[in-house]
Amino acid sequence: MLIDWFTVIAQLLNFLILVWLLKRFLYQPVLKAMDEREKRITARLRDAETQKAEAEKEKGHYHQLNSNLQEQQESLLEHAKADADAERQRLLEAAREDHRLLRSRLHQTLESEKANLSQGIIRRFQKEVFEIARKVLADLADTSLEKQMATVFVRRLEELNDADREQLSAALRSSNHGVAIRSTFPLSPDQQQAIEAAVKKMLPPERTVLFETTIASASGEQADGIQLATDGYKMAWSVADYLSGLEKRVAGILEEELEGEPKMNDHGA
Amino acid sequence: MSLSTDDIIFWEYGFFKLNATIVITWGLMLVMVVGARLITRRLSSDVHISRWQNMLEAIVSGILEQIKEIGVRNPEKYISYIGTLFLFIAFAALCTIIPGYEPPTGSLSTTAALAISVFVAVPLFGIEEKGFWGYLKSYLEPTFIMLPFNIISEITRTLALAIRLFGNMMSGAMILSILLVISPLVFPILMILLGLLVGMVQAYIFGILATVFIAAATQAARH
Image 1 (cartoon, rainbow over the protein chains, first blue to last red):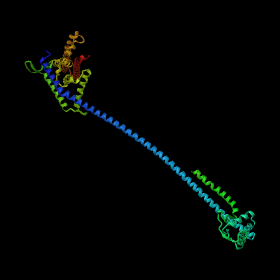
Image 2 (image 1 turned 90 degrees about the horizontal axis):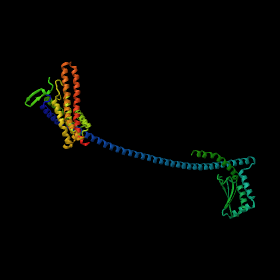
Image 3 (image 1 turned 180 degrees about the vertical axis):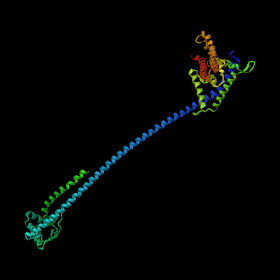
Image 4 (image 1 turned 180 degrees about the horizontal axis):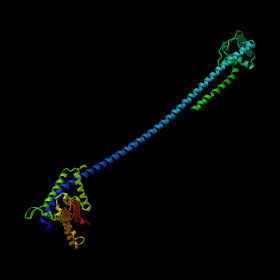
């Protein structure tokens, strides 16, 4: 007989015992361990997910901060640029103003120098002309310029036309002071007497004639020559008239020479 | 030479007897339980696990996966029964590589015992799942005419389970014994390999069929 029923029953029991034992020692512990591991891994993954999400959030936050900073930086830079431009404009403006001021000052300096120069030249000319005239008169006519001038002054006083004479007489009469005869050279007693005689003809007897020697001034106030001055009237006999033409010509030449410089400066600014 | 290990009797007292089948089965049970206990004594639920634990987990999760694939609901509930069926038969077949070993599954008594356990377990699981009447109603499906055929199928499939496993395991051992007598040593080794393969396949078939029966018994009502 192939089947032994006692063995069947015994094997059935054996099998049931094995099922129980394996359930107790194999399946339950292994399944439990696997479940626990799965749970742990799931928890870890969830943790990781949460952390990742947080990290993403942080990242976004920092991105935002970064872009804000960049924007701020850009705006600051923009401001700084604008400020620098304004400052540059202001400095340029100031420099232009300075330049304008300096130029006008330079111009004034040049003007005054020009005036000084022309006056110096005029004085020089005057002196030279006087020297030449004196020398010519001394060498060729055997007379002095001063003497000749005094002579001519007296003659002119005597040869005044009626209107001028009347005017001079009126001025002399109304004057409270005396008459001043100013000359840029010392008059000799003869010359003084001759002039005094000519003046006294028109002068009330109590008035005195005063002789003064002055230095010729470049301003033209007193040119080389003789001048009669009283309150409200002045009569002069000098080289001033001759020199005024010369002065104009000299001024013209100076003008031409000095015109170049300011133009160059204009170009430079 | 004996046809079955049942015939090797160590001790006998009336109806009770202690034959080689029972003793070898005890030996197998001892090795399996002690091995499982040793490995599962220090189980780790962390990510790092020992290789033995890894092996056990692979086996258990593999069985679980198979049960799930067949369509049994709640496979954890049936794994101790189905898994033990498979592991016992497979381990019994695996030990054929030990010289002088005779698989207890080569005895019709053992296979009959296993088949009877399936025959009893399937209705029990079915009743547990669907209730007594619910389970009995499944014999009337699709129509009441099918009742005798259902009952016949229930019995024959149990017989088939027992005989199939017995035939395969017994024939393997038998062929090996015969070849050892008539041929040189190399050829029986190849036959041992073949026997191992057959044993594994039979273990798989037994387990799968039991699972299919359980699945049919526990799920029919849901259609």
